[in-house]
Image (cartoon, rainbow, N blue to C red; front, side, top):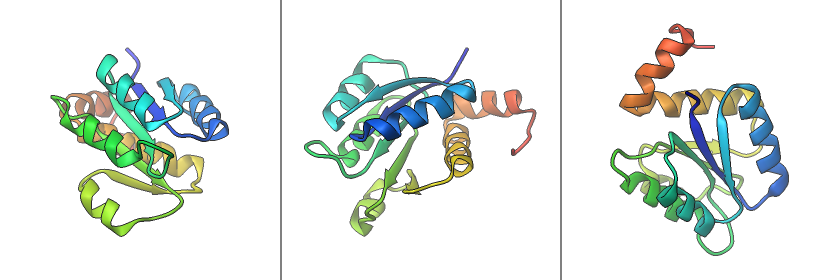
Length: 134
């Protein structure tokens, strides 16, 4: 069974890059090109992780994060941004923050870290990786 990751960003090139990167690592990806589409996907899909841009027109990444966090159990979130907003970072709490631009290895590390935060997925990830941090 593959992990299901929702990618939410208004940049289609970045979405394509992340889908290819995650696909090569064995993850199944769904994409949304807006925050409102991301929220609809969270409500409709069974997901292990949400990766969202913070700054998008209309519904922003904080609204996406709130929706994922309100699920039972909560869905871990990685919040990406090229424009840090300190208030947004405080509001996001334990969400993982990733500054754009980022290296592929840093992104994959953040994905593994986020999946470990979810009790159900964290134990499974540790088994699949053989407790290897790389």
